[in-house]
Image (cartoon, rainbow, N blue to C red):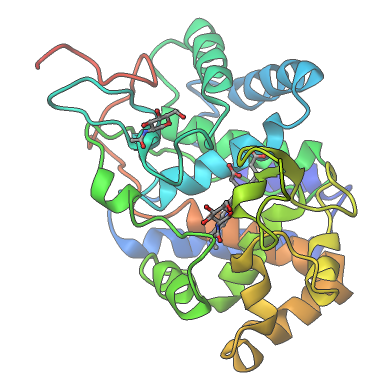
Amino acid sequence: MAAASSCSASLGLLLAAHCALLLALAGAASAGGGVALSSAFYDASCPGAHDVVRRVIQDARVSDPRIPASLVRLHFHDCFVNGCDGSLLLDDDLPAIQTEKNVVANNNSARGFPVVDDIKAALENACPGIVSCADILALAAEISVELAGGPRWGVLLGRRDGTTTNVESANNLPSPFDPLNVLQEKFRNVNLDDTDLVALQGAHTFGKVQCQFTRENCTAGQPEGALENLDEATPNLFDNKYYGNLLEGRAQLPSDQVMLSGPAAAATTAPIVHRFAGNQQDFFRNFAASMIKMGNISPLTGSDGEIRRNCRRVNGKGY
Ligand code: HEM
Ligand SMILES: *[C@@H]1O[C@H](CO)[C@@H](O)[C@H](O)[C@H]1NC(C)=O
Ligand SMILES: *[C@@H]1O[C@H](CO)[C@@H](O)[C@H](O)[C@H]1NC(C)=O
């Protein structure tokens, strides 16, 4: 019922076939055991959750147009470490909690945490103790993509927040200098295949990159943190131009370009890059499906974990 209603809401933009796909995936999500995530999870307990998250992001992007991209990346860096459990959001609370925010992939790079705080505060005001920080990241990612002109999908909800961090795993997040086989392995480890890898890297259609991570590195005199657009063709739009950039050899990150021109790419990722470059609807459908898959990485459900009151701290003061 709720899956159907979130689907009909997107019918204005997308094909009916897309909705059938999302419903099929929502059904498949229950196969992993435990309690399945559901797009209807907050329908009774916090019916305004989606609108609250959307309003805060809309407000934030007036002064910070980059924020939608930054929020999408937070969901990725949360889900790849200990599953989608909000572990990325925890600040140092030593000795028990060593923050993931200081690892190489996040330090001076992951951003948007104050906006997550604002979303949490607004939700605690609307429905105290109900919406998890892990679900905030999943909702924020979808809304951010949609606001930038990308696809919509019915976000599956019901994740609970973890009470630990995993710095070792965060140190193993994909690196822009990883070769293709290592990227593929890191994705396979969380049940994401080559199509997911190519589709999800399509998120580099918006947002910024520090020149120190780009294929051309920084030019003389540029500080290593100088920002450039990830997609130089349409910097703030969520579209398939990113794949066109790859075809022109103009992707920013080495880890982008290896999907097309690395030695092993021809047999695996390159045909998918060509497909998405030639068909934006195909990319959008696959991106939505892959985001749902990524959002299903080892969620805590049922009575596991907790609903944090403050996304930066576990509840209670037991340490
Ligand atoms: C394949 C592995 C990936 C690698 C190696 C990678 C690497 C990077 C790097 C190095 C940056 C720039 C960070 C900086 O300069 O501070 C970046 C930015 C970004 N990444 Fe990825 N990424 C990967 C996959 C993904 C995925 C799966 C998503 C989301 C679905 C994503 C979304 C983004 C976004 C939106 C930005 C811009 C963030 C902003 O402007 O704040 N990336 N990525
Ligand atoms: C994070 O960046 C800051 C300042 O840019 C630096 O001083 C600090 O050492 C870095 N932290 C880690 C763990 O590398
Ligand atoms: C980029 O250039 C800086 C400064 O020359 C250098 O220290 C760094 O190792 C370079 N990075 C890469 C990935 O080559």
